[in-house]
Image 1 (cartoon, one colour):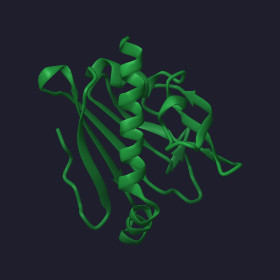
Image 2 (cartoon, helix red, strand yellow; image 1 turned 90 degrees about the vertical axis):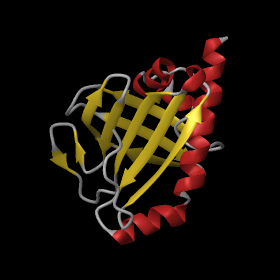
Image 3 (cartoon, helix red, strand yellow; image 1 turned 90 degrees about the horizontal axis):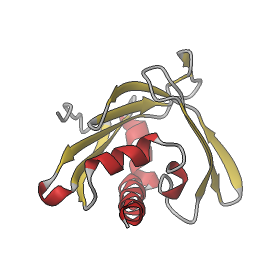
Length: 158
């Protein structure tokens, strides 16, 4: 299920989350959940607009150090409970973005004990963009998001 990775342009990590795959999927696909985990705290998500279908929008607005950052994207692949692929290379209606950054691939699988094997992949157009993303803190940032997601989802189980 894991796509071929190119170390020159792709970043990825896999972690086991102690929450069921159905709940991880729900958190990633229901806009009411996204603000609770999607960006590392203290940054926050202030708006989410999801149209969960191939070609549908995945738009978010972040607040980072008092600055609003709009991130508009589109879903390229949606496989319920298994895979989400979205990119900022296009916006809804397949309109090309002027300065695309990456394509994200989220892979979910059942893990022993009822958890989820969670793989996050960021694909970039070139090695320079990949390096810039790594230098910005891909592993710490996306790792923090995975931890926040797990903590938030555990709270939903109570």
